[in-house]
Length: 246
Ligand code: PGA
Image 1 (tube, protein in one colour):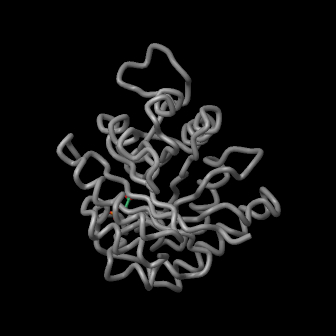
Image 2 (spheres, helix red, strand yellow):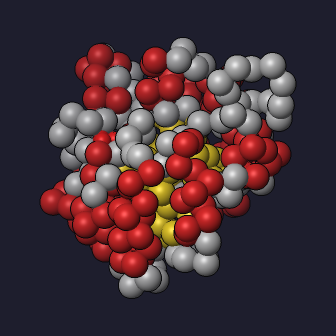
């Protein structure tokens, strides 16, 4: 069974109520893209409204982070159960910005992925090496450690996003050959840990994906879609990227 591609837009800390128009454009465009799953990850303030607006459309709505526990005295945090209740179908965990600015460790990321499973959300687990790690020739070792520590045991019911930290928001990207290498490595890791079922696990590429490089980067072996930051804020650009699979 082939993996259906997934194009996911991570809006990060961008978007106001007025951004609903952008979602409408994405929903309209996604109607013509039957071959690709489309998801938008708005900030938490827009989640419930977007989920209600997108109900019945080809666009699923997700969240950018969750707490590992279902409820409790954790001021400012949001649980996976709350996200599900607000209409989310998925959640990004372990984004490099969460790892960097919020000190999230692999263990914390795995606990969040488990929370997503508990709540019935699909987790997109992010991994990726820094420039220094790559320069030192440690990229694979870093990915192995992150995969080992961040992925939950049991079923491979999540997606993995390979996002080299140096490619995020920088305009820089790995070559298609580099991406093929890293995604092949991740696929191998998944197969050895989860067996045959890992053939169904989607591995997304993320980091400076734009309409101009999407065809080249997203048709590489073992690339099953994209996690897109900056270019997901404009419906036309986001849809132009998704069109690669359309
Ligand atoms: P970018 O971000 O597309 O703006 O590089 C990707 C991401 O952080 O998911």
